[in-house]
Structure formats: C-alpha cells, structure tokens
Image (cartoon, rainbow, N blue to C red; front, side, top):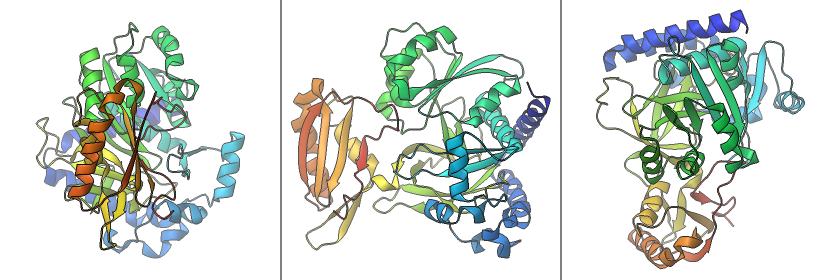
Length: 426
C-alpha cells in the first residue's frame, strides 16, 4: 500500500465531501463552481498549446471541442506533449510516462478515445467517487466487484488506497463465467453494466450485495425493475466515460451530476424537446485538458429538485448516444430525426412479454427489428408499433423482422437501439 496514494485519496475524499455538504442551495453550488472554474481557466487549462491563447477568458469564449479534434491534435491537449501515436504505443506495451497512466475507451462507436492522467488525478477520481458512492468508506470495509469488458489503472487505485478490497471481473470472458468467482469474492458492492446485473438477477446465484451500481450502458426501466426486485435494493448509477466521472446516484436513486468538479452546458438534441447533449468542462483535470468537450450522450434531465435535498442537477435517464438517433427522409426529402428513447418505448409498450430486443437502422430508409426467439410471437405487434411511430413522424422506412437468441455482447457495450456505420449515407 502506498502512503502517498492513501493520503491523496483521503484528501480528495474529504474535499469532495466538504464541497457536497456545503452546497446547501443551487446558488451556493454554482458560486463554488464558478470560482473553481475561473481558477482553472486562468491556470491549468491554458497550460496546453490548444488553449494557450485563451488564458483567463470566460468559458463562453473557448471553442467547443470533440473527440475528433482531440484525437487529431492529441499532443496539443495534454501538458506532456504526448502524441496519439506515442500514447497508443504506451497502451499496447502496458507502459506509461513515469507518474502517469495511459488508457483508452472500449471503442463502442468504432473509434477509441485516449486519456492520460497523473497519479494525483487517479487518486482524486477515486476520492470523489467514494465521497458520492460510498460515503461510509472510512467507517466500513467494502468488498467491491467491478465487472467490465476492460480494466484500467483507475480501478487499481482503489486497491492501492488500502480502504477497499476491490476485484475486477473481465466481462469479455463471458457473463456466466463470472458468476462462480463473483460468489467466491462475496462482494458488498457491485458495479457492472445492466446486462450483467440483469443476468445476475435472473440467475440462482446465492449473493446479497448491500449496494449495486449500473454503469457503462443505458439502463432501461425494465432492467431496473428486474434487478431491484431480485435484490431488494435501490439500484444506483455511475455516469462516467473516458472523458471523466460525471454523475453518481443519491440514496433515493436519482443520478446527480457532479457539478462541483465539472461544469455542464447542454445542447438540445435534434428531434426532441426534452433531450440534451452535455458539453463538459472538467476543472479537476490538469494533465489532459477537457474544456467545452461535446459528449455523444443523450440525457433527459429532471425538471424538479430531488427530494434528497442535493442541488446538483438530476438526470432522469441516460437514453443513449447521438450516433444512435435514427434519421429518415420524409416525402419532401427532408431528414426526420427519431431519438432512441422514443424507439425503445415503442417496442417495450407493444407487448408486455418483450424483455430484450434490437432495433437497428441498416440503411438510409431501412430498419431491422429483432426479438428473442422466445418472444417471436410478439414480432408482429412490435413491428406495427414501430410503423405507427414512423408514420406519426412522416417517414416510411422498410422494416425487416427476425428472431434470435439475442446474446448480450461481452466485449463491448450493449446497444438495443443503434445505427449501423454508414447506414445514413449508404
């Protein structure tokens, strides 16, 4: 156990708890955020070539960036001057510059994103995570199981801190293959994608975690119901990505954005009056600078404060990705956008027996609907529900239907609604 790691993590934990506890009102939270953001924009944020000319400028003056910009000029966005080629070489060799960690996303969208963080940032990430997800970590020993398709040094920090017994379970080896080792580990806390938690809930495994968090994938309402009913608890969520840690659920189950560490702006999603895409500025990161970074996520925000009393913005649901918005031409040739949440609702309300499905835009004006073999008799009603949805939007894509076993992928995120690469301009 590293004394430095423990000290840095505990300091981050204490600071995060203090910030959260002091944020009694929305106004006070935003004052703290703006003070820290101003310090960041005048200091660390401008220490990289991409932003050197903007030091001290208000956030609105900084350009919006995205993954394409980051990866095309990677060296300009990190203070090490590390190029993308150098970062990939480190990642493939299992190495990193001394005192730093290099990692990458799972590449759900087909292009993986890189990140480089310092030891202090790893500890800060863990401290903030614990302050929100396991605030009793100083008084209780937790056994945390993390089940994901890819491990990172971020999770290893937890073991180094000495406060947690954390074990990583490699989901890429199969869902059921993890049941035996998981039972032997006897976790008190489980962090996993909803596809794994649902399979666990439907198994006869004798396991009773005190807390569970869904992460890495869209959490559908039906999956939540199955998991909570099986384990008799309120399922939490952890909203994080390659770009950072953005939200953790409160005890009531509301996913709150961690606005005392990240500033959020929101853009409306085309085709919806209620959905937004976040633009994030993480003022806790000082190695790879993320200012006004446009995420690919689709969020639905709560319109009223959470009864828990936290003034941090609540997320009603993470609905998917902007890449998974269907777009079809209407009779006049104009493209009509249909968001994943609307498509998902059309399927699950078509027949109460539908537990799993895939709806895929396969071409400029074509869709594939797939249900499990055991619910193949619901294909007709599900297809009719989709047709009604599309007709209401003024579009008429062809719908191909099929049934299969619908095995959940273990090496990537589960996406029930998705657009095939090139489908919009095939």
